[in-house]
Image (cartoon, rainbow, N blue to C red; front, side):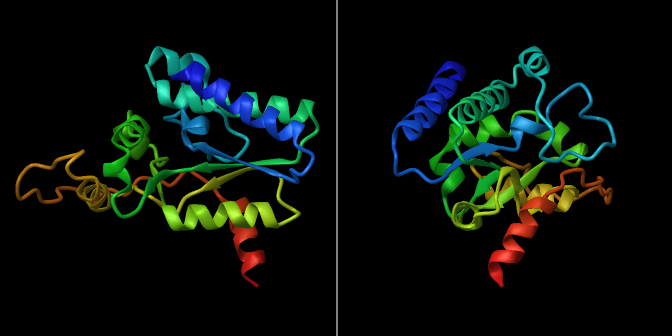
Length: 204
């Protein structure tokens, strides 16, 4: 999976480099390319400058996160080498009517380590329609550059986690008549101020 992901990213960027009509590349990536490392339990904010640690992903067998990290880094390296105008959209877990159920492998791969993401304030979800709109805005806005974290919500309470699990049924199942037991709220560590500026500016 990792080699295919990296090769696919390189092929797409190279094809864009050879096409004279390409004005900008909007590369679809994942938040998992930014959140994983030995310091995931720290209290530091996670923003667009963050990258997942390759060795940590290998050690913990987070193959989806490793594939997304390596493919995005390969895309950026080639885009800079070819002097291409590129932005990346690093999306949370994509949700929408039937999306998770139609793409179970991607959904469950993203959610590997979900408990750790949840407890450390980096488990985020994004609506598919909003994600598509962000891609359009990122392409049309000439000021966009670099990476953008894209999510609607950070799941950081048990109630929100239960709602997420229910929306992913039957991929994830809860015990019958499950009731929330705790009231703990985990600190939100993901920051997407950069994306908010784009959304606000293009909405006016």
